[in-house]
Image 1: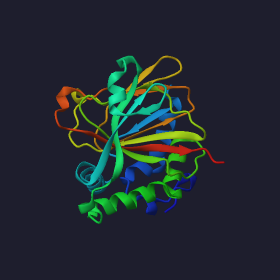
Image 2: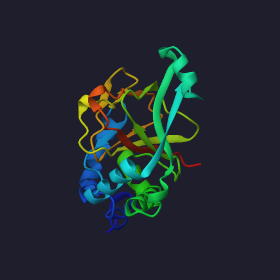
Image 3: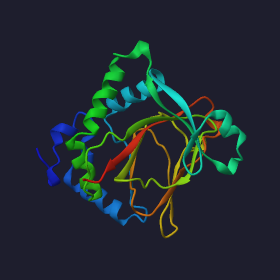
Amino acid sequence: MTLQRGINAKALEPWIQGRHFEPDQIARYRQAFSSSPAKLLSITSFLREDVATKLAQCLEQEIEFKPTFSLYPSTRVTEEEWTKEDDSKRFFRFSQLAGIKSEFQFSPHVLTYLRFRKAFLDTEFIRFFEAVSDLALAPTDDFSLHRMDRGDFLRIHNDVHETRRLAFVMYLTPGWEPSFGGSLRMTASNGDVTTVAPDYNSIVIFDVKANTQHEVQAITDAAGDRARLSMGGWFHEPT
């Protein structure tokens, strides 16, 4: 069955919970996105439960992450250089995908991640995000995995860069609590602030060109050894 705007339910069913691509729900999402001052939409319980579980276990146990440090405006530096600078100059600290641990190269969870990444960047997924955002989007491989541990943060900035248009972040840490930090804080051009908690199996999208600023609040001591795990990236404008 093909839904409005050419959405192919058969292609999405293995990954997304079915209610999200029903025509009435698509219309509600589009209305919520367009009426948001920040041009932002958060969808909870986005992926099928089995898919979310496999992806969460893959990120938690089978992916190798590398700590990354940056100073304003966006300069990658070593940990030593970052530590020596005044705190006001520190832009972010978090970990990014470095690779798949050797012992898990062909695990079921890793294979699910690789299949999902390919599907997510194919035409059928793009049509879904075009429908809910009412934006024309193009395929992209601008996609990464992130891990944020206690004390990690990302300070205020925008994502404007070349042809980026729609940003997305999927949160994949089961049982994450608001007290752990890591919320996305979005400031619209009119000054309105929207805070989105990194709830497990939710996704947030926002229009990069909506003249907004955003940050990720620091992971607090309450998180202990828990890490905020996410997949994120950008769809681009058609060229």
